[in-house]
Amino acid sequence: MANYGLVWGLFLLLFSHSAFSQTKYEQIKAGLVQMASKNPQNARLIKIGESDANDSILGLQIGHGPVNTLVVATHHGNEYGSTYVAMSLADNLSAQPLTDQTVFVIPVLNISGFNAGQRRELARGTSWDANRNYPGPCGTEGPFTLKSTNALAQFIEAANIVTSATLHTYSPFVLYPWGHSTHQTSTPYDNIFIQMGKAATVESKYPVGNSTQMLYPADGTYEDYAFWKHGIWSMLFELGDTHNPSQSDLKTMAEVNVPGLKRMLAMAPKTRAINHQFTGQCDVRGRFFDRHDE
Ligand SMILES: [Zn+2]
Image (cartoon, rainbow, N blue to C red; front, side, top):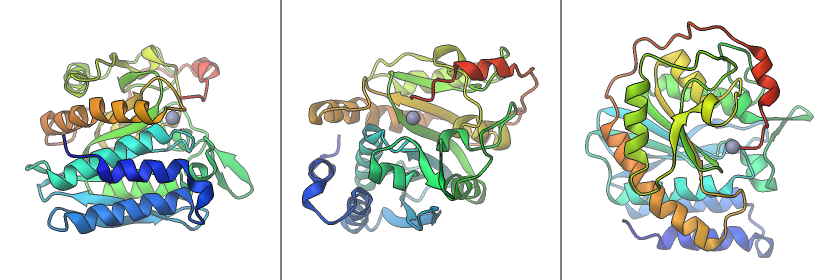
């Protein structure tokens, strides 16, 4: 494991932010800049777009391999455990990149929600659940009423992302498509997704399963969109046991998930899935079971 000194210091800042004039996201940005300057041969700061609050959505591009992969956290602003694990992964990869790929890490997608400690993201006078904001085969609460989700969608297309992990709290689970409102939850690739999930959970022992069956149906999520639209090998991590992890909880979440994320990215297929259409029937009654809490 790489040392967590840098992200650990960042964590302490996050929890004492009232003493600082910086927003929490400015501290994340400072952490990314520091990682890039510590390992400039491996990591560089990138911007994928701007949010509705005019914040730059930043990340790190890490490594030089030909296959592009993505880890994105904090669609839900209150889920700072996911931010911490993403920053820990970025720190680790910056020192020890994967040889065959370039990993993009975006630690916070919903910046205004993250600064306010709120699940939803504000835009045009109302708030939206960023992870119900993508187009999907059985509907959506969007699509793309948020600039952040639109920026991420444009990014995964332009960067030709092959595999992605999206990080949330909590359950714990590692989940694969389909997760929308349907009873036909299988894809032609369930076996590959299960192998990816097993690789991801050697240390964490988190249960692996299908999104709809293990959690609840949700329409308009990033993870289904990425697979449905592009055939991206798309996994959802529900990390830890709480939306309010303590310092020691965060340390454990990083220790058991960073090696798993790296192993999963390393073993995932190197080209996108071919048969990624949804051919089942939607049952929008499933939507009433969407708790909007994970
Ligand atoms: Zn979430």
